[in-house]
Length: 167
Image (cartoon, rainbow, N blue to C red; front, side, top):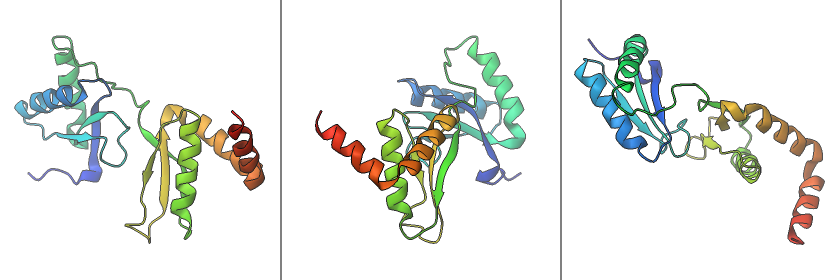
């Protein structure tokens, strides 16, 4: 039986601990021993929060994989984050010819305000929009900051830059 396409795979384990890669590999081994195809994805891949690793399995195996991980975590120190708090959500998207510059400006503004983000898309795919994504727990704050920035316009950005230069 062929595994489902990658778009039908779901996250069953995520860790942002210093040992995330080792924990994820251990989870992958556990699931492999149970006959579940599992893939470790690092933060070098789109959609994975910076500093974390994820274990993904076909959606059809997700419930069984989560049960195995839960039963094993009582015996092993899997301190991964099973919640969806780190799932990335889109807070900005653009398909204009200036989209990459706009997205980088949004990302810089968010990071200056303590919100980590990732860019999805870019010049390598010019016919596709570019997106800025943040952890779902940061969504509301990111949208608020973006709205404030858009309301202030270019004049507000210049004022902010001038006031920061005096620091």
